[in-house]
Image (cartoon, rainbow, N blue to C red; front, side):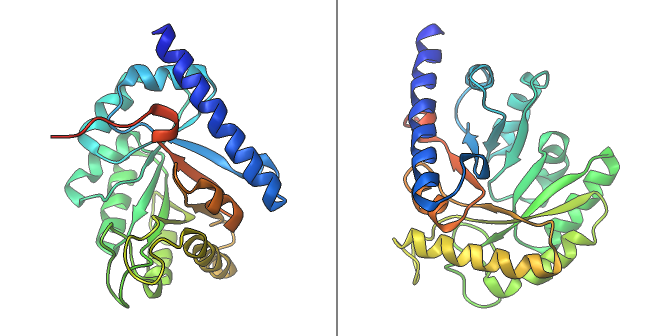
Length: 239
């Protein structure tokens, strides 16, 4: 366990240096960017080590993995983010441990999240996931709503009991006009965020960037970056 702790500490230090350098280059302070460590496929023991090393935000994308892991770490002061595509039949479970759901992309999901949050007496932060590869009125290959659907979802979240509209999230698209143009994609998301905050000023969270492109996200103005591999290592194959 000591070897693993040292490995994680070294990886975290390198990621911190990358974020700090990106902030400096963009004229931002390090405090403006929150690191979320994506712990999917890794055990609760790693989450505990990360907490020892100062990590306070972790993310998961599969409820069947996240629920038992969150329960095993319930004694820790952590903010849990759910970042995967979420089916409505998983909502009741996710609401029990997630503090923020970053993948809100349809009104039906908003309704289900609200009902579950009210039932459990919780307030869940929600990000509208924006798909920059989606056609008007559609959804993206990796989840998310087309940009023309942002306001409808924002209004739905803002008016739903038990939910709090926190902002926007995107995943760099693999197809379409923004494919392999991460900086441009993230800058577009920040533009959408600025427009959103005219009517919803508290919705100032912009979640973008991962291990390979966190610098582009920070340069564009992201407030949160979601980093997995660079901290935890290359994930084992599933299935």
